Length: 262
Image (cartoon, rainbow, N blue to C red; front, top):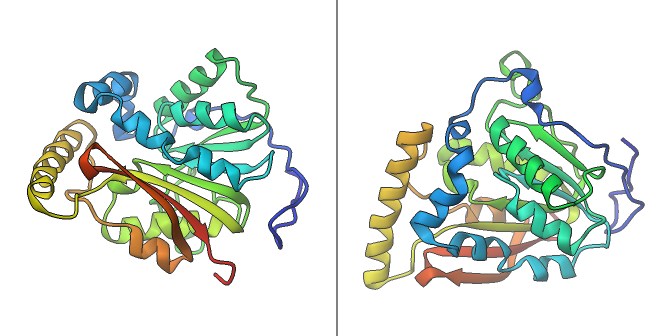
């Protein structure tokens, strides 16, 4: 892959070769593999199109800060709906689609192919972002867990990903993605949230409890509660520039910018 100057906020484009879903490496099956073919209708059954609206609520605002050919990392992308929206707005974007589920990656690739989006600038990578990195323990590292290039991306996107983790696993995912972000990067974070107060907060707790129990049963999800990733993102230099709340405050989108000194 050609190099790119990451010392400033702009630079020459990087040619991203077309990739194949990394399931070809015969990595272990992931919990979300079993629901990948049904994910879209399950999501709509539970919440209508609210999650789709949340994914793109701040996408146009994010694109305003990006070059015409940004380099984007879509972590936990799922079935490719966000990737399609991004490429509609930034067709020259160089996109790394990362997910731990090979089946989700295959569905994302099929969606982009079916939409007529060119895939020559899109790469699909099966990567477990919670696995130990090379710097932590090379012997424990999965063969499918390639390190992400450091300081490489203009845009980091985590749509309904960080709410899957808590504790050290959440720390590890955020640290790893933050290292991959460029010095002037934008981070678009979309997740479930608890309303701030009152009956809406109490109802939100019940709804989230049901959702976590449901997905634990289907996918083996480790997290049992929603842990606010905000302080960890702030610690990595990403401050909130814009935010949106949907569905009574139970869904939230945040546009975060990396502080220049971070």
